[in-house]
Length: 421
Image (cartoon, rainbow, N blue to C red; front, side):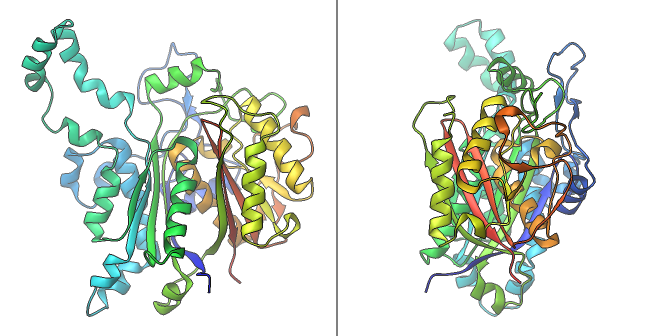
């Protein structure tokens, strides 16, 4: 029989809340965490808005404070989210009740949606470059006089993967997936498929990102993807996205495993798909052919029709082409009857973290049976007509949701989730 895979733990830290519940309440209350950047002086910047963490106190976010000397801000964010989800799942308490934990640890995996290396992690090298003046030998001579020997450890892209496994003694399959906007959705699907293939019984999945940095702000603005003040998905005067930092995590396991330990079950993952349009790094097809395929493949795998879905969590990043093509694809597959929402207007675009974060928020919507409104929507754009999206909340009439993720290189991902009655 096909394994049923469920979500038994969730956690998040975002621009609107230090945990998932606070972030969810902010969405229900119509609150946004998008504000002027505080990490550097943006007084003279044209693009000065971002969704920074509501609270960042690494000493309270990390259990092992000695780690703070070895990891970056984004690693702290990821590890904090992982701890929340693991604690929420109650899995460690159950493991502690076992007489032999060997098999349990060996069949518990760690899957990470990683942002990779950031521009600001190279800042330690700037004085070296300046002093060397292009002389490679001099660069080598002064390198260790000017750069802390722990510099390399702080920038490793698999730090969260390593430390989640080490701290919790999870020894099963593991992957580190730095794949931009679909990293989180891909990490969930990779773990889902590993459980289906009987490689493990459970996994912690973490997405984390600290996209708010001067070079990133400049780069995204230069390619025309940033807004100067707000994130208005599907709106007639939308003008771009807003970068964010966030961490999110979910704990998944087989239904059999969850029942055996008496775990609370929040939702079931039914199916998913990742596709690529093979168009290049930046192009987006007007009809989102790849997204249509991803949605249809997901429905087919679950033996669902479009009418079986209760809500759609759209990528909804606020950029012109992405929103228009996403609306077109949703309308082609689902028509205008199924309520559509999105969460980036409130928490910003957290890139690698987005897929995991929006999965957790979608589960909250399923639990409370509402489709949150997009508060920043004032007038539906003419190129987004045909989808059922509103600024006010709508009732959820069916316990299923499709969550969409999109990224550079014309990649698209979908997950189908269902509330377990």
